[in-house]
Length: 159
Image (cartoon, rainbow, N blue to C red):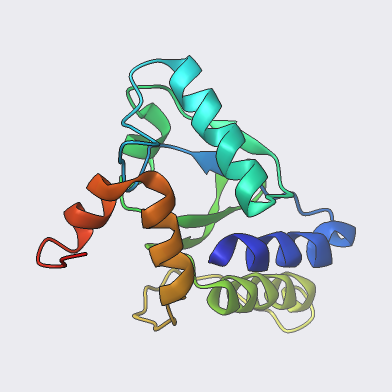
C-alpha cells in the first residue's frame, strides 16, 4: 500500500520544511469489522486501528462524519494533494502514486529555485499517469475490513 511509501517520502522531505498528513475521510471498503462511520468516535477508532496495523508515521487528521474535507477536495479515493504557501495547489492526484508525487514536488522546488535566474513562469497542467497496485496489500485490507468488504469488491468471488 502507499502508506509506507508516503511515510518514507514525508521523512525524506522533512528537512525541506515540508509537512505531510494523512486525512482520514471515510472507510473506503466498509465491512463487518470497519463499518461506515456514523459518529466521530467510530471514525476515531477506525483511524487508530488503521494507524496501528499500517504503522502510519504521519499525523492522521480526521474529516467530519459528513466528509466536508473530502467533498471540498474532490471526493475521489486516495487523493493526494501538494498545497503550497498561500493555498496554491501544486499537485492534485486522483490516486496516490508515490513516484508521481515525488516527481511533482521535485519539479516544483526546481522551478522555484530557478524562477528568477531563468525567468521561469508557472503554468497549470494536467496529465494522465500510471501506478502499480499492491494487490496482496489491497486484498489484505479488504479481508481485515470483513467479508462484506470482500464481497462488495469481488461480488462473483466464492470462498
